[in-house]
Image 1 (cartoon, rainbow, N blue to C red):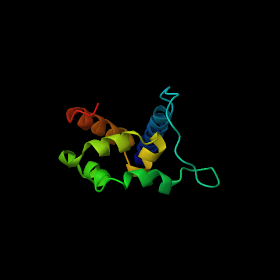
Image 2: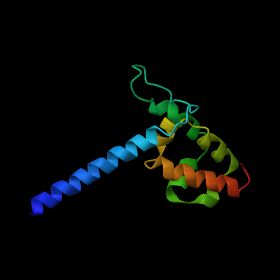
Image 3: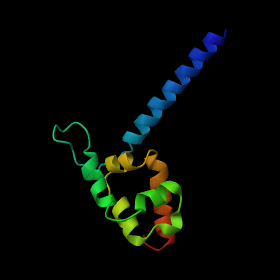
Amino acid sequence: MGERIQRVCMSILTVMVVMLSLSEDTKGNNDFAMAPMSEKGLLPNPMSCVADARKIPDCVESLKQGNLKDIKKECCIILLGLPEDCFGILFPMRFYYRVVLKITCKLIGIF
């Protein structure tokens, strides 16, 4: 009986992960930029993705640690200008961090 419950839970979890993955990739947004590709063209090039983010000291870390008072105009402009793939490389939960960043930038009068 316990093994059956584990199988059902794993099946539900798998379906949820697949549904979340599909919903994240197919938002119907045709105008988002693709991340810079590696030389072989298969995966985003992480070094190109973080090059702009490194121009602003502690910008990414401030957002990750929730130090929203340390986020400045330049941070908003650079991070919100990153392609979706690059944002996913910098932040493990890109949707959450993007929403928090947008709200913070609106509060400080950027957008």
